[in-house]
Length: 231
Image (tube, rainbow, N blue to C red):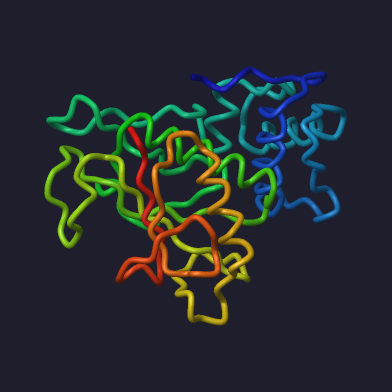
């Protein structure tokens, strides 16, 4: 589904996501921190001004209308639009590498192919998570190879429905963390687990923090959550 064309007067989740993307561009636009937008989903005067400033500095038509070119300049042309299926695969699609909606990738693009339903699940959860914790992003690692099948060193990750996700850190850094590290945030990770389990397509989560409900302990899962989706 292509991003909606947005303009002054619009309201809703798409506007809230737009405001988040614009806020990420504040340093690039050389604006003072005080100019950051309130992410309230209301495309008012401040959001309109921020869009126009971004368009001007991106050498786009300055009209305050957020269409495909402005979305692309912001780093995402489509919401939920995956890359084309990999070679030899008719069903797997690649996790978009620059969504701007609450996640980052810590694996190579070639290691992040999944079913359409699994990819959508990740994007749904990431967007929901970001609305509650806008300063944090979910780290997504291995999913499957483009054609599925054997993916060393994993015994699973063959059908596009297994995803590795990093636990959350207290400092929000895009770095590895183990449950024994002082930088590990149980509270943030618990919120991530709750968001995952609330999604109808999530089947189970393997993770070794026994203080978090809904996860199953399994050897080797101190530094990542192994999320299995139904489809």
